[in-house]
Image (cartoon, rainbow over all chains, first blue to last red; front, side, top):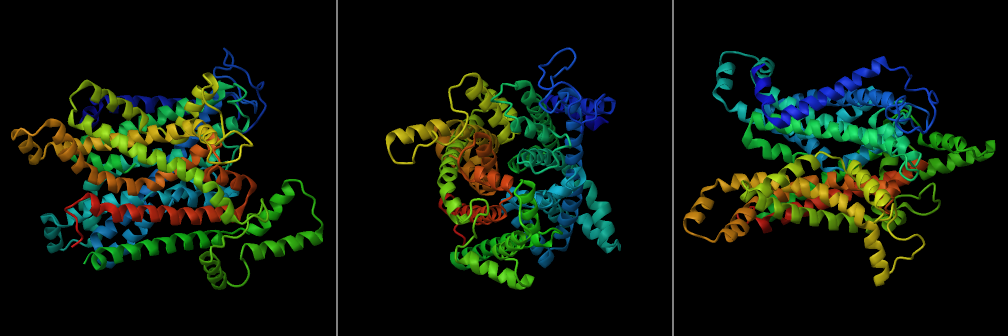
Length: 284
Length: 334
């Protein structure tokens, strides 16, 4: 709790935190929605924002306000699955590579370096295209998780490398702790803060890719997400037809979400270790 | 020494990464439980073309040959490399029978022009401004720029592109909504064409430039603030070296080193971001080509663009890495 209060003193953390709370509340509203987000034509099409339809309606005949509540919820679910699963992979790979060293280390790091160098986006697009029919919230989250761990595994590995040289490692080995116990009980507390700050970055990355894939039309377009909302707006030429309210909602929400997540992560990184923030910000 | 200790391992890694990447591109579709041939036929049907039963068999046979799906997995794999090394990426299915390679080389100059200009400008200007802002980090303009960068930094390319498009092509109408040049105009080296092209590519270039510059500005500012604390800067100040000389010769030059590594690492990200920007602005480069390929299900073309990008990006990263010793006199790879 003290940690949290310390963090809230940073205006960036406070702004990011409250913005995220606002979005979570907005997403929670979806449970009380009067409309089914997968059904089209429940309301008149292309209405401007009014007292009845707060943010207007779109060309599919959906209420944009209530649709957006579902979109935020689904986008956050995808991001959370991608973030949590890729954190687990990153921690395991980073720890094994850092602790075992030698050939294991070189093989794992070669693999993660390859993931960093290859234009991943295109590989993901190709994959998504092939499994388009079975892409739902969970499979998309897992797909993104599979590609999202490489950089963070590297960060964790370098932490382990330095921890391995500390005295307490020698002490616990000499007193007979097994490797697994040592790595998970003794090293985990040092890694945990890093895991959280990279989780936020990774979630932002996952939301960005979700939107990208949706704009390309590669997701199940009947599931409302921030990306599919943009897809339909582009598909119906909302810009050319002057339906600004249709584009404005998903763009404003994603701007708020990206800025909030970024500010949270910057503020946490600075709090953890002011000197290493260069590397983390550079990680993109 | 340089060759044996550094160049050769780095080149081996380069070749291995390309091998691994292209192998992945080859195997991933084949390990998935669906058949691109049957899928293409199904999509042809879904698009409303009526096909005779005999014609379907013929198309299936043609597609199997075209996708290189004859024989065992091992045979396919060798045949695939054989064709690749001869520069044969197959033919595009929906612009039949144009070779994929020709489609890519037609789109490439557009993407390359856009990317090279914006990346170099963003890197140069971002680092320069970031360097000065880091050195004079207590001035008000430095704080102001920092805040602007904090807001711009996390915005994805396409969201920013949409905002620019709404503002400058829809609300104010200073720039065209889409395209790389006025429709129907033949590419040439005349002044009129170049002018037209620049006018059309201004918005996409601007959106990539601004976001890129924000990233380099931020990292540079932080690095410079760290270098500022080094004793050689303190010593230079004590010895009365001109301040402008300290900033440009000592501080910025030292802080540039991690930025060069960063440039290499981020090339992949910049590339994928630029592809999406092209789609938003219907700019006639690789991104739009990819978009059309996805819409039409042109499997060969997507594969070709992916293979091509893997080679291009890894090569660009290699070049940046190999140039590194020229910037850092301390590294001689001895």
